[in-house]
Length: 213
Ligand code: SAH
Ligand code: CA
Image (cartoon, rainbow, N blue to C red; front, side, top):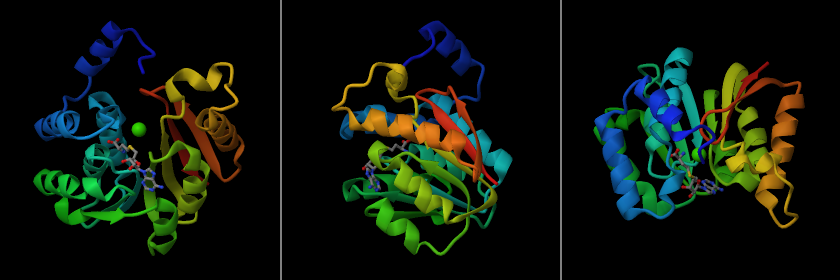
């Protein structure tokens, strides 16, 4: 989804950190071999995630929705030396491809893959996360958020991706469209949730930044 003119998008990308070669390759392989390649984080948003992670300097990161591993590598770039990134995906077919790229990225030993439903796996993780990236099934966003919040501390940062849902959150609602309704409710909830302070950033398809109080 493009909210800005393509010429402005190009200008923004050209004046941001360039995309590492490994991630360019990962994007190409995802388009060649994997279904729904439009789910992958792109150059600009990837650099935003990387820089946010470097600013936060997290010891532990939780990612919900690994897909082919693009965003995981970006987030891992900011990990502390002995830090870990736990990433969860329900689709086991992607596991081997993720691992190849994680190992090549240099963060392989710090990235721990979990295969299964995030809602079953998160409660089993005995860790406090400094940073969380929510990017799996949109209809479960609120459940991921509640599960993740239990594993956060004051100051932890929770990012929620695709919250503008191609702009559908401000269009007349199709009653059959569950994901949009859930995202509208989710965005409202985060805005009013006294446990966090929240800004919705108009980055790509919408990226909400919430800081746990
Ligand atoms: N973060 C990735 C894109 C994630 S796409 C990137 O930016 O490159 C969403 C992923 O969520 C898909 O790979 C899908 O298999 C996974 N997913 C869907 N439902 C899930 C669930 N309940 N638990 C864990 N992963 C899930
Ligand atoms: Ca996404």
